[in-house]
Amino acid sequence: MRAGVLELAGYSVTDLTETFATPSFLLDVADLRARAARFRDAFAAAFGRPVAVYYASKAFSSTAVLRWVHAEGLRVDCATGGELATALAAGIPGEDIGLHGNNKSAGEIATAIGAGVGRIVIDSLPEIELVARVAADLRASDVPVMVRVTTGIHAGGHEFIATAHEDQKFGLSLATGAARAALDAIAASPGLRLVGLHSHIGSQIMGSGGFAEAARAVLGLRAEAEAAGIEVPEIDLGGGYGIAYLPGEADLDPAVVAADLAGAVRAECAALGASVPEISIEPGRSIVGPAMVTVYTVGTVKPVTTEDGSQRLYVSVDGGMSDNIRTILYDASYTAMLANRVGGAETVRARVVGKHCESGDIVVEEVQLPADIRAGDLLAVPATGAYGRSLASNYNLVPRPGVVALGDGEPREIVRRETVADLLALDLG
Ligand code: LLP
Image (tube, rainbow, N blue to C red; front, side, top):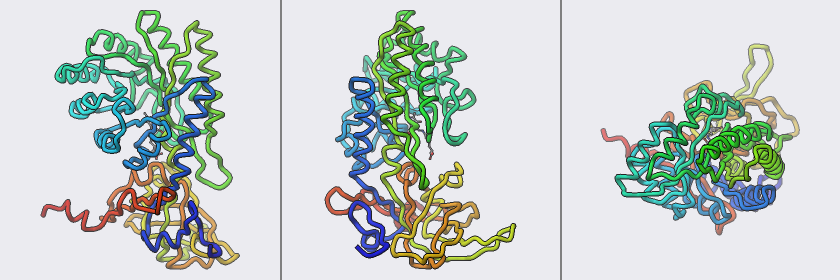
């Protein structure tokens, strides 16, 4: 190993970028799999029986990744027809797939029913009729559905990623009785079978409190439904478990949150005189986020005097908001490190920016970097696996980076780097 060269899964990033170029997402497969296993084991241990863990594939979806998490015993949550098609292409059995979405098309629902998915999560009252109609057209019976409940609990890092307060598009409100009405409507639909209630309160959540509060609210609805003769076998507590992005931060520990949730669920069930339901969860970010690093090549380096007279070094990289929109969209914080050599001892206040024609094209807002950073250096940005490649765009007709898997045989691209030719292929003149 050369001094100062970052190694990932035993490979030096200088070697990797010679083969795969930059920018690239580098995935540590063993880390991904270990995270999947940790959620599976922590929740099973806390609840004293298996808990179905659905990997929320919106965080990052590719057939290889879905196969790896499935091999660890996880199921796959899909939010669109595209994610569903990827899960099916990966060979995930239908019964191990769940379908979400606030605006599913009849076609998406038909594909899901045809594949025999384990659950379709109902997100509105009209959708109950739609799923029932599609099921009838397909002569399918016993179609498993869940009801997504809006519990009114506000949690999550940024307003755009909080999902259970009232004034947003997801789910059926507990407060207005819409969730309760959905249960009656499902009970009255012969082709549908209620498998449970679902709660997802938001993303990048750093404590157990909101999850526990939501669980209690959903269990209350379950008790009400069961008193009216409607069986609710399962409760899904959603995803949203936060991860570390900066030095000094720590992931929300699955063992801690699982223990807190198991405690809250048991206590609430005891108070309600109810049995403990089957439990499932839907983590995305916490499985794949920390398992990837983006590597960029540095280009233009420009010292700038800010409005308060201080200095800031603008370090431009060969990607930007097209491969990481989270910084500017959610005010998300990342760090960056020199990855190809030992930098000079002196550090400067720097901002890592991309190559797009937009001043908000910022990858890392604030970071100390070696003062001698220069064109041709490699910069690594950790924890980009979740909602990095999956939110990537082609703004300025920049091709999206590939994803390179490390630790499953020889390093290889599991998602090919796009080329300008790929983009031009869509241009029909
Ligand atoms: N289940 C449902 C129903 C969801 O809507 C989500 C995320 C998850 C599970 C997984 O949540 P996670 O464990 O990954 O936090 N683009 C945003 C995050 C949007 C999350 C959308 N739903 C970001 O980059 O922060």
